[in-house]
Image (cartoon, rainbow, N blue to C red; front, side, top):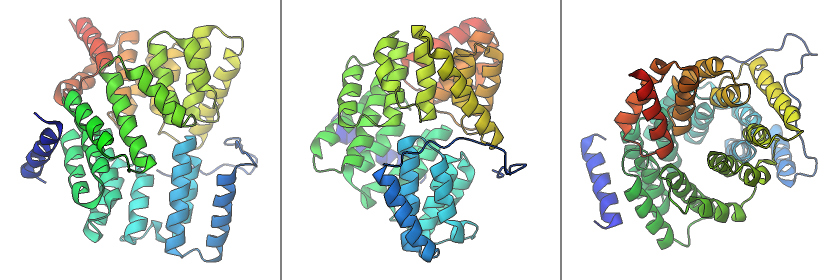
Length: 390
């Protein structure tokens, strides 16, 4: 079957089937976190200038949307959630309205998603879809949220409006991202690769999303070209925090910690500081304890802020750095109640095996069977848990 024929057949079947409380410091002297600032950062200066302009007229929706989007982009690029807080502050005039203007509503949903308020995000997105169903960001964000929740059929269905409201590459990447987790990895990979080749004029952000999806699928399927795909994309953008962290994980799983070290240099991002700790421990480097203590300090600071959105990373730290499997399991189970992505499944399975509490992993076994996910790493862990249950 032709790849595009499969894609549109999938779309037809989907269409026919249905269509935190803020932390308040006890005193002005309480330190929550030490900011990591680069005074020569041009993008940061642009943001400060735009924020100053908005300060003259805080209810300027058009400018507020621009500033909030830039803060959200910066939060993603730097893996720094504080920028999301600044985006929320920019949207303050509309934040508590029952029906904000549609652009503010979509951004509010995005920020709720980032804070793991997935139910709130979906409610906002449903309302936004009634106001302006042709806004493609509604459907992209909705699909992402449903994917994180493990609702993969609904995630694919959310992509369908994109075939009328966005580009071919965005629509196909959206469907392929969910389908690759739902027993259709090979077809999703083939289709997306073809559409990416067919759309050389696509924007860099669209190409980056498509390429990232291909890499994720290649890793889960253990394709022999996964390493080369990582390197090719990192040559284009070596600053991508998510991609660097994923590549470090990939290399650590292959016992290639020395190769992973250069990709864990940007320790201002918590995700990469965690990977730096894991690499340094594997290599028995003298600076290991320094980075370990930095990561522990950042976790403590997140607790002081009332931040619970990084339980997965904290579980990884507890299991693979502190070597406390029971603590890791508790964190991984709490994280699983909120989100169901492959890495969430992986750390819960690993923690259950390490603590020999195999029963705790049963929700992941059910998810594994229901999604039909094709992930070689997870399949091996599932087999270990099943053996432990016998």
